[in-house]
Length: 201
Image (cartoon, rainbow, N blue to C red; front, top):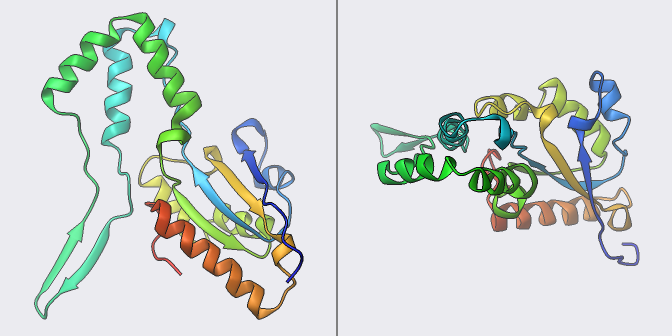
């Protein structure tokens, strides 16, 4: 392995790129990396929305699917199905509507969702790759299943943000370094529980 260097986190914001998939991929380096997808929230402008409309956006985002549905067999004759379901309690909904009447409250909540959601949310997905550009191309084309899984939650893959760490310093195209990157991906997945990852390892 190469001499260790401090990993540097980079972010790719596809929402700022206009064009087709090829245009998006022009800003993606073809480096070995561990990477994660992060959800973007687009709350309505607090100055242009009434309390009910702003609260409706928040409630609709809470109600979206937040994980991949799971199925499993239990014993010889049962199968269980799990899916995410989230909602605010009735009392909290009433409080949300009441506080959303205050423009300052709407501005603060807007800033938290639009600019700081990643502080509070786990990554949607964690992956590893020998070439970040090739792997993201596969995701965009729907070859990995991630695009479809995100669409179940109303998330278009090209509007999400990608963060990655270039692992070129660890990678020299031999089997041991592939295994090392796989361990990093597995550790990150088990620590941060990305809900749209189907399986670990």
